[in-house]
Every structure is written in structure tokens, then in C-alpha cells.
Image (cartoon, rainbow, N blue to C red):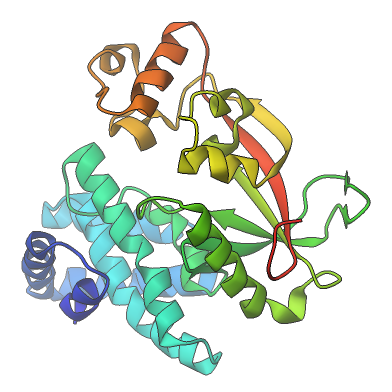
Length: 291
């Protein structure tokens, strides 16, 4: 049941075999397997994080890694999502592309925790309730604009399309433009005066980071596509793991890898007494060009 989807969204063969084995273990425990479907009711009906508590209890009773149980659950929950997509007339290509986010989170979990699973199961209720879609390289969700005004074009509460950047490889300028074109078509009935307003909140858009990105890099190109409207310093350096595969702490910092120019630049930046942060930006797209 779960292996077909795992193959389709390119889970590594080792991970597929692991999940099949763990899924079969749970199936041999009907009282626990039934709890997976109770969690699914919470997941789809409430759209909050209450399902996580049920999954953690299953993992504890099965003596199984909780992040593994979270991923098995999401693979099972993807089946009813397919019917929801069909009912709403959304293509299978978008269905599978959106679910490829599971592969990104799988590899992040393996990298950071050396475990096949996901440590961000809480992220998925909106995606599985058709509020987040991966359209080409980027993911989008509708969001009420949180600021009072943007150049007289956007007002607080206006619908904008919040964009996420899954860790599925390079974010080239070409892939971003292609994604924006797909989104422009997908949200055609919700454009504002023929414009797709895109909002993004990311460590990639923090102004102090821009000079740390190598000249001509994809990161610098992505940053330059947005008009930065806000920034927040993060004294915990929460996003450190996204670049180094380990959570930030004074103990992990020095041993964190320095294989790339960006890693070296970020570590030197932190050594100088500065912290990472988040930038928030707006991009306006007319179907062909960024305005």
C-alpha cells in the first residue's frame, strides 16, 4: 500500500524496504494499526496537531522510532488525498509533485537525526487538506497579507500566495520563473488585477545573508527577485540545521561541515558575533515577468 507511493516519489530503496518492514510490524498489531486510522480522523477533520499525540503513543507502544511512525502515517494518509484531488479536478502530476515534499523531509530526517522518517509531521495537515501545493520547484499556500500596505497595491488581509522552498535541489532562476508560471495558471481565478502576488518568509531572504551568498549564485538570484519588506534576527540560529545537518549549539558549531563556500561564510559570520535571521519579501508576477 505504501511502497507504491514511496517509489513514485523517489524514496531511496533502503528507505522503502525499511518502511515496508515497519508497516508490516504495525499491521501485526491490530490494536495499534487501528489507532493509525483514529489519528487520520483527527488529521483530516481537525487540521491541527492532535494527531501527533496519537502517533507518538503508537510509536512508544510499538517500541518504534516516532519519526518513522509519522512517515508511515503520512504515506497511508496520502491515499484519501488522491481522491480529494480527483474530486477537485487537480491533476495527478500536481498530486505527486506536492507529495514529493515527503521525500525532502525524509532526507532531512536521515541527515539530521540519522533516522528514516520525518521530524516535521506537524507541517502536513494543511498540505493534506489542499491548502498547500507544490507547483514546479516551489510550494504555495493562500495567505492573508500580514502588513498594512505594500506600495498601495496590497492591503492587510488581501490574499497573497505564500511560497515555500522545499529542499529538493538547486533553486535556479529558470526553475523559479517556471514555477511562477504554473502558479499563475493554477491560481488564475484569484489573481489581483492580473498579478500573482507572492509572499515569502525565509532565511534565504535575510538581508545580512545576501553578501554571504557567492556572486552569481542561485541563492543571490532568488533573493534579488523579492522586495524585502521586513527582517527578524534569530538569536537561536534555528535554521542552522538546514545548511549543516545539525541543530545549532556551541557544542555542534565548530564541528559543523565547511564543505561549501556558503557553509564557510555562514560559520565565519556567526563567529563574528552575528546571528542568522529571517527576511520577508514580496514578488509580483504578471504571468511572464517579475515586475
